[in-house]
Image (cartoon, rainbow, N blue to C red; front, side, top):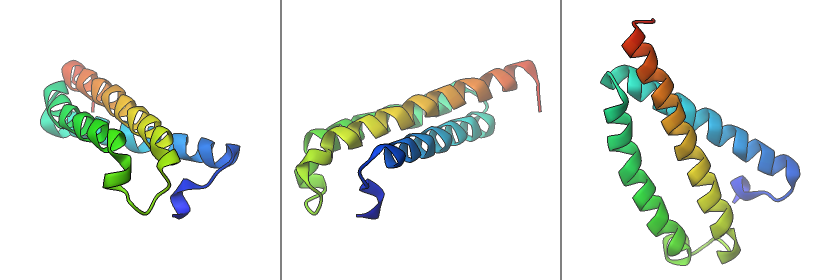
Length: 99
């Protein structure tokens, strides 16, 4: 698949896309749900599903090479980490009354 290119530029692009998407999603969820609880209620099940998919990568993605499991797991942890950072930022803005 086109998303799993190799090389340094592709890895940097993947990290940037994961950080921006995760942070924006977490921030929006915190602002819409009114706090960090909604972010965590969505992120924790996602983390558990991604852990299962990474440990059974060959079953979840039979058309991808099994060597991509570490990259996929790392990208998902990066995404959910920024999701929680974005959620924390949004929750703090809700608490202080900022627009």
